[in-house]
Length: 117
Ligand SMILES: [Zn+2]
Ligand SMILES: [Zn+2]
Image (cartoon, rainbow, N blue to C red; front, side):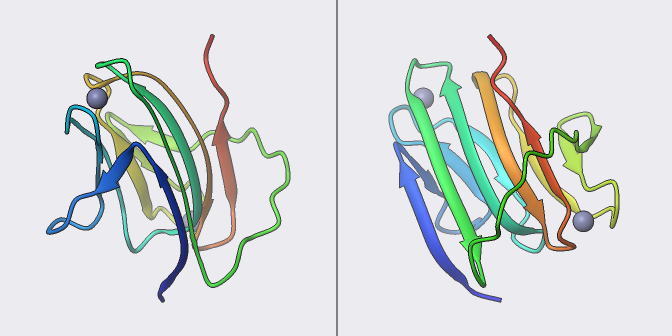
């Protein structure tokens, strides 16, 4: 599958290790998106350096999102789809103060975590 849309703000994906995403301001590694796992992901975080970072990425086509509020299964830093057990992504919690996401697994199940205030 190929990525057809990617929007990045103040962050970038690592050149050699495709799934790693980093803060553009301080270059801290914020997490890892499993390139095999996602259909869609929208991610927002506040880096420890104070930078807000954001990305939205999907392949095939933009899925129609509902309001899932379903948690991904979590194993330490890794978030895992409850249905197909594919690893979704991991977050480097030492490097982010806050984060939120919408995630659609390749199996079609949607997940999200809203902002914590
Ligand atoms: Zn930073
Ligand atoms: Zn899945």
